[in-house]
Length: 371
Image 1 (cartoon, rainbow, N blue to C red):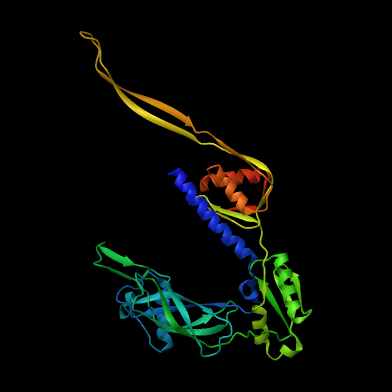
Image 2 (image 1 turned 90 degrees about the vertical axis):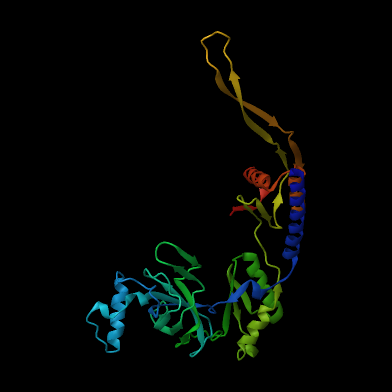
């Protein structure tokens, strides 16, 4: 079984190694590793009420719900003198969140998420009343309203025999908010744009700037490992969108740090293509310990005053398998690393210990990351 597992591990490692080497040498679009600064989403949040619930709303112990309901009714000129006039179980206080995409205009619709913040059992089938959605600066950018869909339910007879699916206290309303204010995302107003790398790297930033300069002349430079500043050519000043589109289609070979990532819980190991090792010797041996328990009966001699006794004897057997040793020469090929580890019969979990020991000995030049 161990030999079969080792063979399968070797096959998977070789297949992964081939993919890694190919991915590293393959050109990648700038669009896939960078984005234009200033083009981003904005978060919105609001506080509102969901009504029309079938007795699954907040209880009368939730003070914010009671005060919010009374305040809403006063807005419409309705005075409530007694608590009995309102069926509070049909109302729930909720927080409404949404994401405002870039370049949306007034009148566009966006999706919202409605989450109960009281002790409501479910907001299924309820309707969200008009709720202003504010950004971090306190300004209202959208208004939400509409029926709430939870995609779940809770059912039962109230005596503990209930069934629940998903989370009925969180729902969504597709296109439930109308944008009331546009976030100005005009790019290139000062004749310049900046690209932000998804992963900051000096070499990658330099290569991006070099690719742009090769296509348009000396218009780009890497300001830091994460940002490339680009001056827009005069003939593209009136069509910045097309200019950005052409830049995004340029291809480079991004650089990456030599890294080995492994998951000790699952025994998964992922090694990048830039991992190198110095000459070292690896010895891998297995120690098998087995503890068994045997029960014996002790019978006394005839005509004696002894008693029949049951005794338990523990036996410990230790078996040490022959160790395997291999000398690994200096190499820059990840195939040699994988082949060497599998040559000593190492399983993925053994590989984790071996790689950690190699790193401690200074024989492997890579970042080891445990997830």
